[in-house]
Image 1 (cartoon, rainbow, N blue to C red):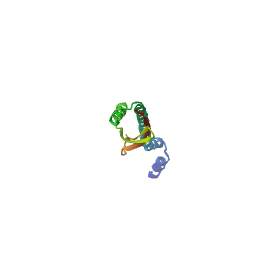
Image 2 (cartoon, rainbow, N blue to C red):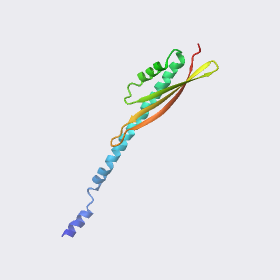
Image 3 (cartoon, helix red, strand yellow):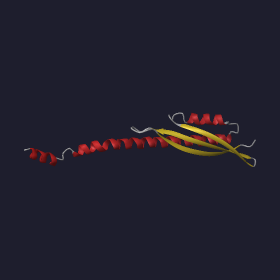
Length: 134
């Protein structure tokens, strides 16, 4: 009798799809969330790169724009991105009478994925801004 019940249960495959779904679904959801989080991170970095380059154009045109004002303008353009952090470093080189400022901005954006540590996307943006003579 026990042998007959065992054969009947071993041959029954009606719940295998539900078990496979229960095993695969959590991994699929985490991968989906990770894809969305990384996509959001790359969008934020691209937007901040645009803000850095836009502000660098202001730096080229306005000879009186200081480094602190430059950073304030970049932060004002990127205030909607929570968690975004960046560092700005400046170097100036003279090419004859033309002064060229290199602005190196290191962008860092946290990507939070469930069940994992925070991953930081880091992206350097180098911008060269010739300063007006005068």
